[in-house]
Length: 111
Image (cartoon, rainbow, N blue to C red; front, side, top):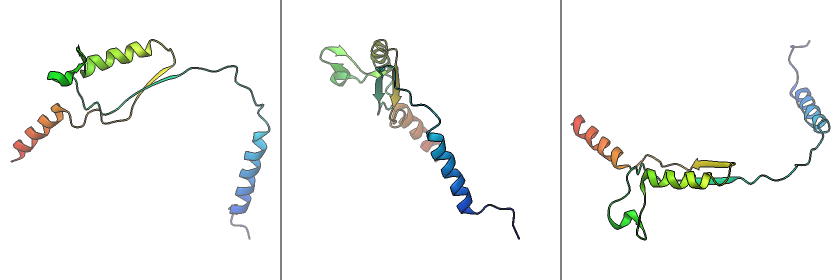
């Protein structure tokens, strides 16, 4: 008596035929050329909207740091390649001065 269910062996065999049989159906097309991709990555931004004060906010004699400086440089670099991808590895907000202030205020209000 059949339960109406396929055995696992039959299912595996059908999947194997579909996978292996499908590999010969599509022609392999050689790439027509290469594409130069530029990957710009940032991490540990920590919500630094403003540049740091004092000598930590300079590269040589140039005021540096903060979101304007970062955005300016990313835009300049991205303009050099239409195939630019900008990614972030994380830690963009944590440990920001804003978050520390918010958490301090929150802790005080709970007391």
